[in-house]
Length: 287
Image 1 (tube, rainbow, N blue to C red):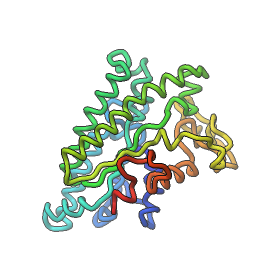
Image 2: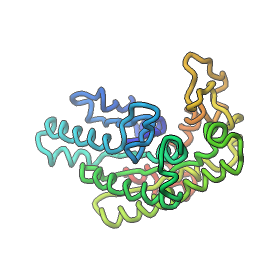
Image 3: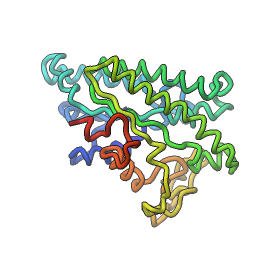
């Protein structure tokens, strides 16, 4: 249940997995006992987010798929209680929200949300819906849930060139518009930990992890992606990517490179700074 599934792949390595968790579409039989990946590109908290890009599996649909996984586990393990006990021990990494901004709120020609809501109002609408969805996930057996916040999405190459047309103040406005969502997500983590005291929820500070001088980590190129990108920010088919990809922050105009995802996964698993994770990091969540 994640959109930034590349980060989760590296987190899986840190957890000791020797192979990637299978996607829901192909997981069969006892494969689901090692975990299931429900990720879908362009999906959002809201059902309509990303619709201009074609088929995607929204969070609500991902939750339906997880309910199907619970049914399959019940068949495998014999009883629903055994299946729920199994899921209680699992780690859930639920990373959504960026498409509700990039592929919804900041696309006024395709969506009405920016005309209906101020940034503060929209963040509240998203958090209210997210709250109900996470509670349903808890109802379906989840007890250890990591909820990453949104990074500075105004600073990605796609936002800078396509949404903002190289206007720096526009970049600032987008980054500021996303901040209320992160504030609301921290409050939601507190609320969930109070109300659902048989479970543990953590917030991962994506904005904080993205701050600082990227050159310290060996990154030299921060304003363009490693591959030539289409107007929607993704790689042009059959194009030749850069050779020095470890020096790039972005793979295309939207998504981070493997090098940056590895850094974020390590920092999410073992917080470098107290501000990286709240109230604890993934390593403590699973212990």
